[in-house]
Image (cartoon, rainbow, N blue to C red; front, side, top):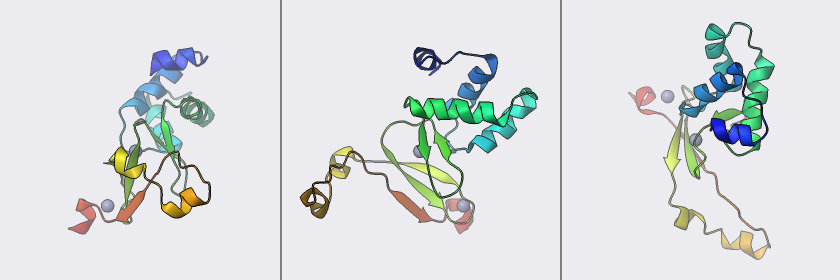
Length: 133
Ligand SMILES: [Zn+2]
Ligand SMILES: [Zn+2]
């Protein structure tokens, strides 16, 4: 991811490298605010704008996904096509694998209207294991 970022023309400052490391294996779909609060411990001078702009740049060149669930944008290091399941009680977001072959089939009404489906993103809502028990 760091090499890709460099190729995209972003200077790799120590702060940016830390941001990339932080998002790279965080599968909890954190918001920029959540990452900022974590990173501030090690980088007290880091600004929220630096965190947000770096994440935005990563998303802009397709190195992270972004997920809009109505609140603040969440960032997602998983750039493979996938769906999400969201817990209504605690807000936890988990990845759901997709069967690309099945999901690529667009509803007939859409195809008939001339709309070209490029991808499908589903959101399953419910209660996670912890919130059910
Ligand atoms: Zn939950
Ligand atoms: Zn995801």
